[in-house]
Image 1 (spheres, rainbow, N blue to C red):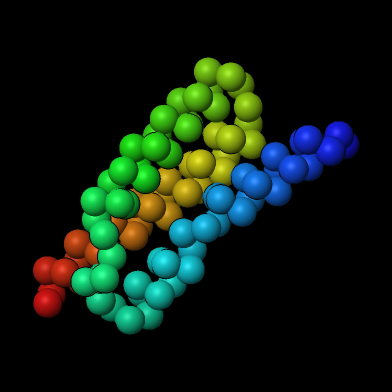
Image 2: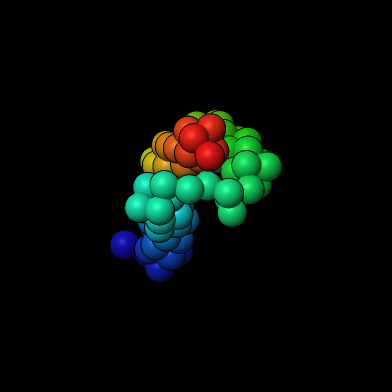
Length: 87
């Protein structure tokens, strides 16, 4: 495998799971006051655009990693709204 492909895969995996610690913390603490919904919404928009870009360029690793990030982002937003409504 070529070095640039390995770097791309590593970067995609890293960014793809980067939201996982936030999701775990949110679920564990069951509070979301410190989380910026504005930032999460901007990130959501960027992830959608990345997925579209991956589709247009036919780059599977971009589509896959950004889809994982998108799912984690949506889960964080849903839990954040849920826990804020309980406060």
